[in-house]
Length: 230
Image (cartoon, helix red, strand yellow):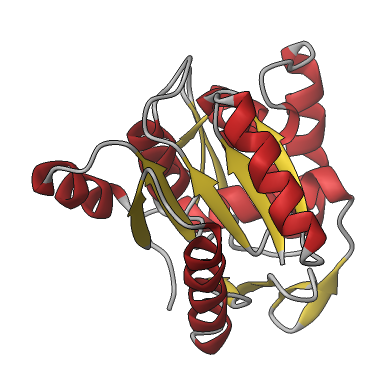
């Protein structure tokens, strides 16, 4: 498994790395919620281990944004000292797939993560996004419109994925910049350039235009008066 550990206790992180790497797993670590969210939406992981009490933004907010803003199905296990029933309910409602309280046994954590990954594989996390006649296969990263392949640069593909997951809702410029560059975006001309290239590929040859500008806010993906497809 490739795992993301979002935890600010460095001793615990070291113990997790020692155990899981010795078992053949690969790990990345983030010491705060903002870094953890950035890695979760820009890198490919089988599952994430998420603490509740984190610097910058807490685990609940990480989960909320991961699920609601980015539409991510990444399996997430909350690993926290908060062991009261209301805390567990709040964690699951925020989007956690499993919840384990500290202290814990490392073998139990491992089997719980293996179960999450197996369930995710069974429900087919790699799926196809569809908005009208536009499709994006998240497994192969192939995009088509009306059956015709679209040739997209990686940045344009990431923008398209973000817009399709949110469609028909508006995605702010800040959210798109974060999807591409995390907390260190360049000037906004770069985003405009990528949107221009994306429009050329997605809308250029077609009569119905899908990418709409929402003045002073951001962009949305849907024809005028329409919504997302299946």
